[in-house]
Image (cartoon, rainbow, N blue to C red):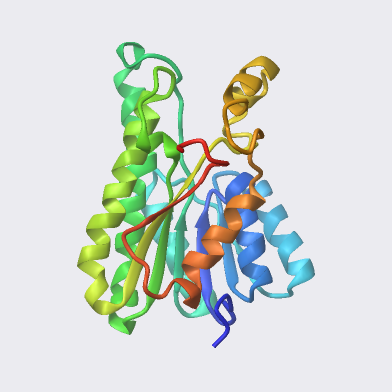
Length: 253
C-alpha cells in the first residue's frame, strides 16, 4: 500500500472552483482520485473540471451547488454516486464571511448566513455521505476550518465562532464514526492568498503587519494546504481522527 495513493477513490470538494478548494481537487486528482468540483457558479466549476480532465481524462465531474441549499447538496451527492459509484472522501471547504468588524455591529442575517454556510451546511453534507461510508466501514471526512477558530478577533469574530464550531463538529463525529473506521478531521489554515481572504491581504501595510511576526514571514498559498488534505484522505493518516492540522506559517506559535 502506498501511503498517499488515492487511486480509485472519489472525493467531493465544496468551494473548489478557486483557491484552497481548487488546489485540493487538483492534488487529489494528481494522486489518483476522482474529484467532484462544486461551487455556486457553473462556469467556474466547469472550467476547473475541464482543466483537470485535460490532464487526467474522466477524473473530474462538475456539479454546481449552493451549500445553503439542502436539496442542491443532495443532488451533488446523488450525481457523484451516479457517476463514480460512491463517495470515499468529503472535503467541506466552502465557507462565507459577509461581515468584518466588531460583533456588536453584525446583523442577524449576516450571523445566520455565517453559521449556516460554515457549520450547518457541513453538517448536512456529512449526514448525506456518512451512512454509506459507515456501511462500508471506510471513509475520510475533512473540514477546512481556520486558525481563526483558535483565537479571538475584533475583525472576524463571527467567522471565528463558526470555525471553532467546525473543530467540535469534527471531534463529535470522530467519536460517533470511529468504531466503523470512518475518520473526521480538520485543517486550520492561516492567512492564505485567496480571493476569499483578499480583504485581509490586498492592503500592503496590513499584510506586512500580519506576516511580519510570523516565523515564516510570508502569506501562504492555496497549494500549501492541499498536501494536508491529501494526507488526511490517504492511508497515511489511517489512525488519525478528530484532529486539526494547523497550516499557518507559524502564526499560532
